[in-house]
Image (cartoon, rainbow, N blue to C red):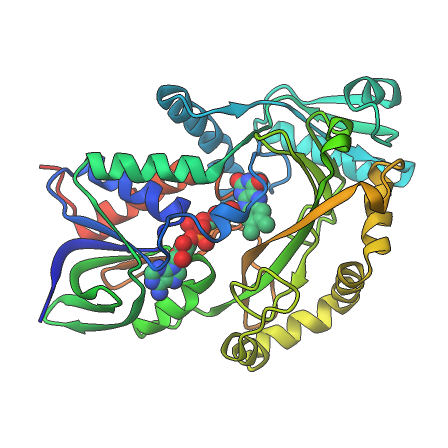
Length: 406
Ligand SMILES: Cc1cc2nc3c(=O)[nH]c(=O)nc-3n(C[C@H](O)[C@H](O)[C@H](O)COP(=O)(O)OP(=O)(O)OC[C@H]3O[C@@H](n4cnc5c(N)ncnc54)[C@H](O)[C@@H]3O)c2cc1C
């Protein structure tokens, strides 16, 4: 027996699933759309545990989807927030070279950022660094005035409200457990009953590969969870960070290195690192899922990735286990910071798609299969880019599913 029927079911109520459902219901008013979210609230995983930065699009390879989605997405996001009174703060960011050796990589980043259209970038020297961020180290830095901070959970809730106003359904507490294709429809067995849909949009983040597998699709990648751990600065030290202070990142890795991030609520986070997590939703060091860990260890791509990056992985694990090592890496950016300045710990988990050859997918990856679209890799700047990603997915849906706006 079918409890509910839809034209299109979006699996996952994170920022990308909600943005896309909102756009679909705005552009195709007669399309019956539901978002199925397993948690009781939207944006409880990557979206609700991210750094809250509106990126300007500096780091990404020119021509990549990251570069393109970020530069258009940041503007769309700010317009959306302006129209709905959602608070954000374009507080600006410094990417800081702390030694002369890092300057060539900083200059390459500047060239990339300029090519990507990141607005207002400027190289600044030691004196200006001290004026902008008096407690930061640095011999040279890129100043990005067009980088800001926001609460992506609030943004997601606004997308969900607009979805509702457009006539779409948001079903929370609705975990998709399995799917079956029959007579041109997909039947989803969920914790709130059986749902049928003509089309599926897989936006399941940390579970995107599992959801694809439920549809019998081999997507050629596995999601490997990486926990990003951080500490909040104690309130009396939050004044030491005015905006955002980042290091020059390792160009081989999709992570930006530990940094200082001011949040819209006035707190400051120091981190995150990137350690292999033993559970897809493993927010603490002791989180463990036999299923997730066994699945990862059985995946040949995991071992190839580990062989390539074992040294980086070892250093990250060491920094995670020993707080003084974490503090030491923060001190390269801010020499005055001590362990006593660090307060509550927190963490987010990144869904990193890894292929069978052990390559970490650097760019977004969105794949089509019969009557379905799968968002397989949506790393940072996925939240900044949510509205441009949604436009891209809706374009694919229009062509592949033959959607009719009438
Ligand atoms: C530590 C960290 C820091 C980041 N910092 C930034 C940043 O500063 N700026 C930026 O732009 N981006 C940042 N990102 C990236 C950004 O957060 C992600 O790109 C974005 O949140 C991805 O959204 P999503 O909707 O794909 O995934 P998610 O937010 O993870 O949503 C997926 C949803 O699917 C649901 N789900 C999964 N399986 C099922 C199922 N079987 N049935 C029903 N529901 C299911 C989950 O419960 C979840 O709510 C960061 C990411 C992390 C992890």
